Amino acid sequence: MWVTDGINVTKPMINKVHKLIQASGAKLTLVNVVDQIPSEFLLLSENTPSQVLKSEVIKSRLALENFAERLRRVGIPVKSKVLIGTEPIEVIRLILKNKHDLLVKRSSDKGSILNWLGESNNLRLMRKCPCPVLFLKPVEEKTPHIFLAAINPSPEDSEKDAVNYRILEYTRLLKNYSSKSQIHVVHAGVSIRKQC
Image (cartoon, rainbow, N blue to C red; front, side, top):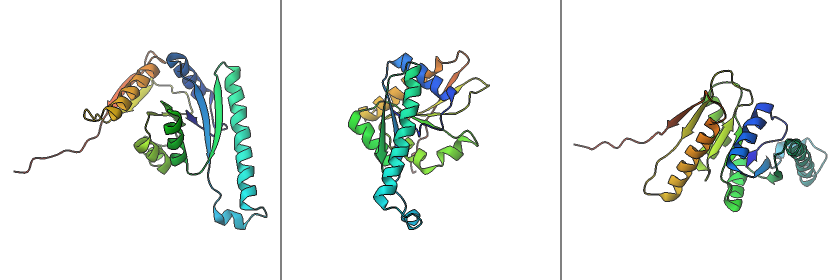
């Protein structure tokens, strides 16, 4: 599942997703989440809240379907869906409902990893998503690709461990994208000290 507005997408992102789909045999669903319209915005509008929301959903659906058609032309079978609500909540609900096995999202092309991870939606998805999350940079990298796989080993929890395995498997598939790429695996844990 790829969370996108269908507009801010680059050729390098499409190429990476296409190669991943070819390697894994996955099916692609494009998703965009339209936020509920803030009440302050409605004070400035002549339309009713439902009219404003309907207009936003129509614009989003059109952009997503145009992008889906672009992907179909290069041989990627794709479905598209527009959701209404808060992005992390609606995305996770859809993943659980349809049992998606990977979430793809655009990362920021500016700043450090801490900048775009600091965005609340990205951080929530990283922490709560029941499947691996792949953040794609919108530009082609001139240096070798470095794929960072963040895992949380849980030998006592087979469900969490299955997610870790899928993270590593998708990372391996992506590594095949470039012969000069590297995989870095990280895990941050809590140190439990024995009190003497």
